[in-house]
Image 1 (cartoon, rainbow, N blue to C red):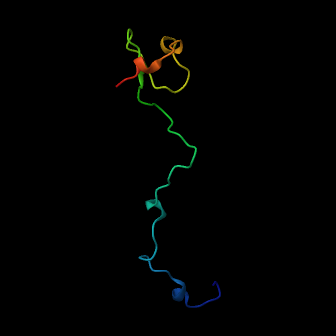
Image 2: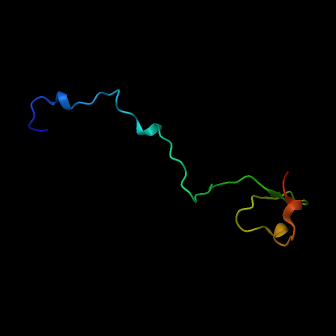
Image 3: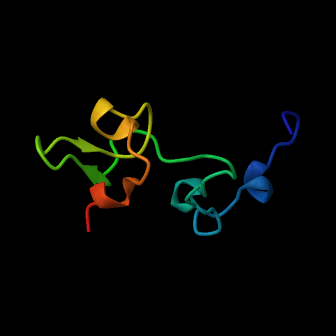
Length: 72
């Protein structure tokens, strides 16, 4: 292409080019939401909350039935 005198035959019209930024990437399988999560459990006495992720706090760790702590 460097030796060609008329390079106009190789030009691409700008209307034919699409932007790759408009395509959204879908999440990969196996990924999960990171960062703060909404609270799923609330302590009855203190009002402390837990999202269900990570280590369970002491007020719910020993409970056999966690359904009574669920936030409706």
